[in-house]
Every structure is written in structure tokens, then in C-alpha cells.
Length: 325
Image (cartoon, rainbow, N blue to C red; front, side, top):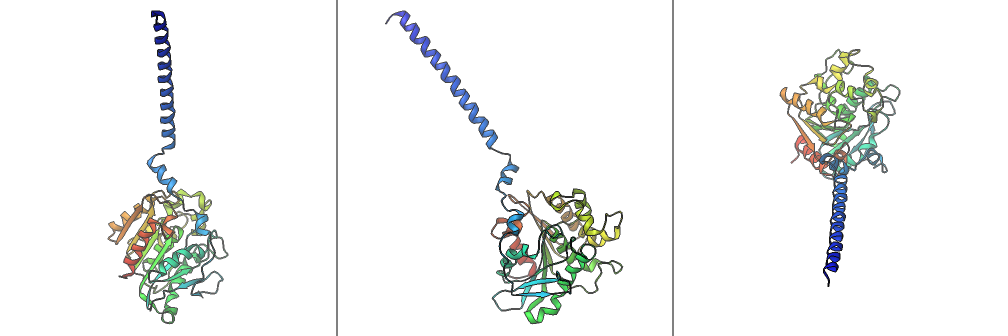
């Protein structure tokens, strides 16, 4: 092999080596770019894992209850009662469904929840109420329907073997607001439109992604619920009706003097966890027995979907509040 031939071979090898280095560099750059695009932030990873939607909650056929009982004369004043197979008397969980206080949902929203809680050995009283869209709904009747529905338990307790010494309220989202409010009815002054004497006492409340403070939630005005949903519920803003917010917004009613368990998803963008956190802090400052559990990898609806890690927290809270071992 001549020196010239060696030079040509070396030059060709150098060119090929340089080409391979460039190609390898380009491949690594493309791979790294793809990794950066494909790998979302920590919060984004959690959101990708969130899978339960409102459509899921509203899907499925109704699950028949043991009995459907009217608590008033209006067609929407009724509840579904379910009770365990075990002998009574049973503690009772009053269920108050969400849905923006509107007609986008009915008590069927809570059928799965009712069945799951009944399997814990607890009777469930899943109540319907007039939404803001219905004739007569909004202030004060949406609230009063919930109150009358709860007090109806006194009329049916003996016939259905219900233990009224162990009654809790449980609600989701807008229903969480109503569950907190209902648990604190003893705090309502007798000059309020919402006053009903001698409300049935409850031993605790479980608020699932609940809305504890109407004034702040009014500022969010979530698009999910449509414009002005809090004003539609209350008949106006806090400047127009300050007394209504004092007797209708749980945050303004503190201390509630009832044990509270707040459970929310870290990724909830319908009722942001900071809304619940503020209420929990002020409740504890007012010497209320209040706890907040923020569930990772959960959004707004995982807390009402039996079988999720969030639901395990819900079951624990329910059992602790009804005093069932």
C-alpha cells in the first residue's frame, strides 16, 4: 500500500467518523428533546393520572334504594333510604349531592356512594332538593329543603331502625357546602330566613371538595357552573344581602361546633384546595375539631368514586365520625 493510498483511506475514515459523530449527536439531541416534551412536570403527571369526570359520575343506571320517602309536598322533596343487611339500629349518613346547586345533577349522582357506605354497616339517606333552576329554588328553599330532609329522620327512625345519636352529613362540591351548613344549623339566629327551631343534631360532617366560603367562591365564578352561580343561590351578592351570607356560608358561621373532615384532591381546579385549607385553618383556630386531607393524584371527582385511593380516606373519615368500630 502506497503512502498516497494510506492518506486516502485515513481521510475517508476521518470523514466517516466525523459523520458518525454528527449523526450520533443529532440522534441524542432528538432523543433528549423528545424526553423533555414527553416528560411533563410533576403536576402535569398527576393531572394525566386523573381520570374521573363529571360524565363518569352521572353515568350508569339508577341503583334502587330500599325505600324512597317524601319529606315535603314538592316533587323534589324526597330522599332515598338504604340500609345494611345487618341488624339495626344503624348510624346514618345523610348524603347531599353536588352539581353547582343546579339541575345538572340529581341524587342519582350519589348512588354509588350510597351503596358503598351502606356496605360499611351505615344507613344512607340520600336527599334531593330544589336546585336554583327549579321553581322556588335558590334562597331560601334550597337550604330549607336540605334542613327539612335531615329533620325527616325523626319521623322515620323507629320504623327503619335508625340510630339518631350517630348521624353525619356528607356532601360533595356544592353538596359539601350544604353538608357543612346543615351540620351547623344550631348556629343560625332566629331572625334568619333559614332558621328552623330544634334542628336534628349531627355528630360530624364529611365535606368532599366542598365549598366552605361562598364569598370567595363567588370571586372564582367557575365556568363549570355557569356565570353568577353563587348569586343565583343567594339571590345576590354579600353587599346586597350580608345577613344571608352570615347564615348561609359555613366560613362565616365558624365555629361550627361539629367535627369536620375535609377531603379534597390536590389537582382540583373546580374547588381549589386553598379554599378548603383556609376554612380548615380558621376552624381549628376557633377550636373546632377540623381536619384536612389533600389527596395526591386526585382531582375533583376521585373523592366520590369508590375504589380510588381518595375513597379510602373518605371511608376512614366516615367510620371515625359515626363512632362505628
